[in-house]
Amino acid sequence: MDSAHYFSAEPVGPEHRRRLQVSLAGRTVSVQTASHIFSPDGIDKGTAAMLRSVPEPPPTGSFLDIGCGWGPLALTLGLHSPAAEVTAVEVNDRAAQLCRDNAAALGLEHLTVYRPEEVPAGRTFDLIWSNPPIRVGKETLHALLLQWLPRLAPGGRAFLVVQKNLGADSLLPWIATALAERHPGEFTATRFGTEKGFRILQVDRILAG
Image 1 (cartoon, one colour):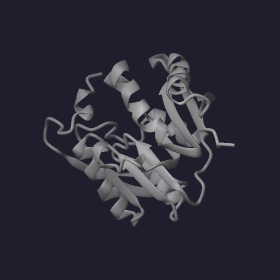
Image 2 (image 1 turned 60 degrees about the vertical axis):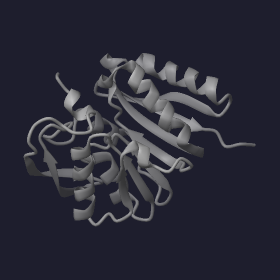
Image 3 (image 1 turned 90 degrees about the horizontal axis):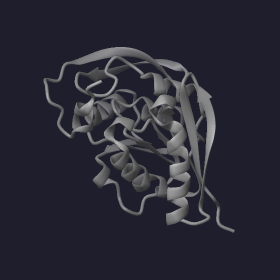
Image 4 (image 1 turned 60 degrees about the horizontal axis):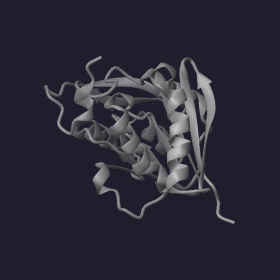
């Protein structure tokens, strides 16, 4: 699959928006997608597997979606938890604007979409959800995970969905080892579950004391 376009800040090709009806947070909502972004035809299989598997987010807190695309995970967080602060990050400007527009259409004023470098350096998160861009390559993926997973607040938790045949079972021990080297004794990384060929990985930041 030639998917490099949705890892670029500015997709090549015209933007053809269309409206879809999708199920998010137990309700049917109308969203916009567009050409030359990730999963323009709806909720991709990995994200759907994650949404079926993970617990509902808590009612309050600071949440993060890494690589939000047009927004299925971030919008779900926002719909479930209107009193939370939801942050979504996305390198693809077209996808980021779609997520902003979808959030605005759904009245999710507590959801903000940033380019990664725009997120304040000291901000931490109680919950991270992500369908990370595995196809960017191992080096870029590892850098991305080491950029954001340490942003978990003490007691915070991350869920990542990774297709089994794209390296989920080797990524998990890498995460555990990389975090242990950089933050000894602060993180655990485990497999939360398996859903239709996808692994759901769980990373926790241990509460001090």
